[in-house]
Image (cartoon, rainbow, N blue to C red):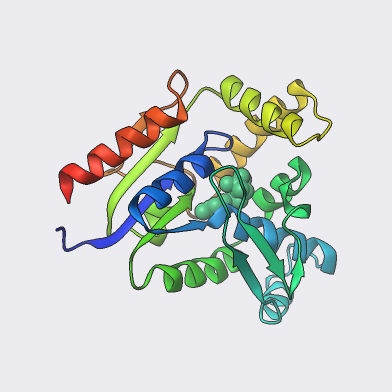
Length: 227
Ligand code: DC
C-alpha cells in the first residue's frame, strides 16, 4: 500500500460527469464521497443571500465565521449530495445553472478558497475519501495516492447537463447551457488561485466517447493496480 494519503481525487471541468463517477467510485471502494462543488455552491448561496459586497473580503470573512455548512450524504448513485446552510436545507436551491455561476464567481475569492480548503482538508485528514472538484489533486490534497482528471468536449458536457436538467423537469435551453459551460470553464481555469488544471501526476481520462461505467472501471483498475 502507498504511504501517500489514502485519498482519490477527481478533478475536471463542469458537466464532465465527476459527480456520478465519484459517487460510484466511493461506493465501490467504501470511501466517503466529498463533493466540494456543493460546498462552493452553498457558500455562494449564503453570500448572495447576505447581499455582501464581494470585493469586501473582511466582511466576507466575518460572515463566513457565522456559517455552519453541512454536507448530507448522497443516498444513491443518481442522487446529489445535499447541503445545509445554517441548518436550512438548500440542496435543491444550489443545483440551478444560476447558482453554478454564483459558485464559480465566489470560488475565485481567496477568502472563500481559504475557508473551504481548510474544511476540505479536515474531511480528508484520516484519508478514505473520494474528493471531487477543480483543485483537489493540485492544491487541497497534493499528496493524494490516486489522482484523476476527467475531461470532455464542452458541447458534450453541455448536452449532458441539459439532459440531467430535463430529467429533473427543469426548463433549460441547450445553447444557454453551452454558453454558461464555456463561461465557467474560462472563470475556473483563468482565476489566480487554485485554477482548474490537471495535476502533473494525475491520470487524464477523456470521457467524450466513453460511458460512465467505463470511466469508473478505468479508475478502479488503476487504483487496484497501485494498491
Ligand atoms: O462542480 P460544481 O459544478 O458543483 O462546482 C461549482 C463551482 O464551484 C465551479 O464552477 C467552480 C467552483 N469549484 C471550485 O472552484 N473548486 C472546487 N474544488 C469545486 C468547485
